[in-house]
Length: 317
Length: 317
Image (cartoon, rainbow over all chains, first blue to last red; front, side):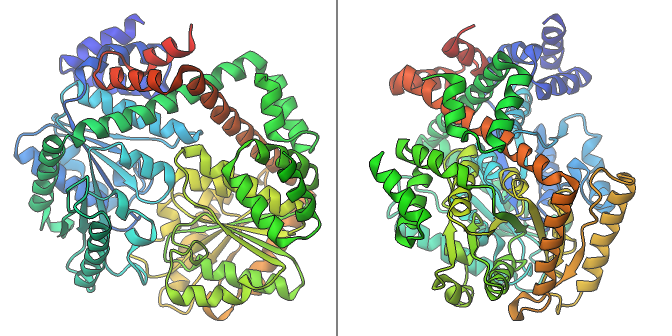
């Protein structure tokens, strides 16, 4: 308890080492972590949380890197949370990517954290959300959350951002990956990266067609935001200022329309349900114990009882 | 209750219409569904469940289609469960794909079901698992589960299969997608599809390198299975018999090594935890009611209380 609250005080005070330790504490999710988060929580709610998602190979890590550099040029403090196993921030990429991000990593006003994959479905979402809270509380004004854009849990993580940037690249197989992966519905901003490659204009047109169809379907729209389609060459920074401007415009739109508050509520509800589930399961498993748990698993595997009947027997009623 | 058990009787008897209705019932997951699943469950455990996963654009749906055709030629009854939003089986693909699968869809010994995306993280995994159980119980001997191969929940779904086929294609951006998406560790069989494209041999070599590194790391290996790397051109069926032979060999290996039973236990444990979580959350939310739930959401969103403190207040201790 003591250790956690000391870390919180130091981290809020700008101590980088304390921040790193605090984030590790929070990732581990013990009792100390929870009391630390309780202390930090009133300090949150200031940061603009921007999700960046897309298929592997679209260059989204490079784009995140360049957005972060552009923000630093404006003196904005930047947090980067990489949930993408293929990101250079998580160590999963080529050497060249890692060299490119090296200048950022040494900047004291940039904090980069890569998230390890968790055992449980909800675990990664919880840990990511808690790390974002810590960065928000200690004053990182812009937090980039990079996820690989396919998969329901990753889409859920992206959905918890205020602004979601979906990254596409031309020439990856026959079709537009974002369409195939069902990412269009969560996109606030669309980026066709690697725009110097053949097919970029065609990819942008395909995205525009879908956006216009969606807009027509929604009529005037409760939402009122038309996702812009931007072209970038992240490798040399081309188009990155426009992406940054679009995130700022989206933030203004969220404030002006009241959507900021409703997105917060959606995010909080998902998180509440997620933490409730994990906590309830923990308690039941602790209560019945490992031996009993494995006995149920064996009975279900032997087809003596089905899982729903077992669950009713375990928790009653 | 009555309706459900009548459907079960008819479906076990081979009535296709009853099967379709039963699967819809199971997807909706009400009381009727649970009693139906309890009745069906002792009939399960016969099918070989094969997960097919890979990035969008690798052609895995076409491969699934061709594997199903090859199985039909051996008179095996085939179930196909598509969890991939980009699959032609879910309606998310090009017209040509759908034309290709039309001959399968009219075969009474093939059953195709596409899974809609669920709201909750665990919901899709639960629904998929239950649909597979129904197909298993009514005698589909080979069940193909197609998932888009990125994302933690999809990987979890793939992991519940007896055999996991990871599909790769050459020429999709700079790197091997399966490596980037962290799929290698779950692969029992690797397929380089679109093998007539440039770069297929290079892709296969890259996969082989990783497989050999993994094998070296595991030494003699508790597992004892070296994932084969096969090349296919699913569009014209080239290499598909070899994929089918590899799944049969893997099944034999699972039986001979005792891994079949241990995979079953892992699958059952995941499912037990998942169902426990959903059921426990349902009960708590019903108990506190919608108004109270939203009041907690509002307090957390207003930073009056953090989510962990709220959860302790809701469930006590």
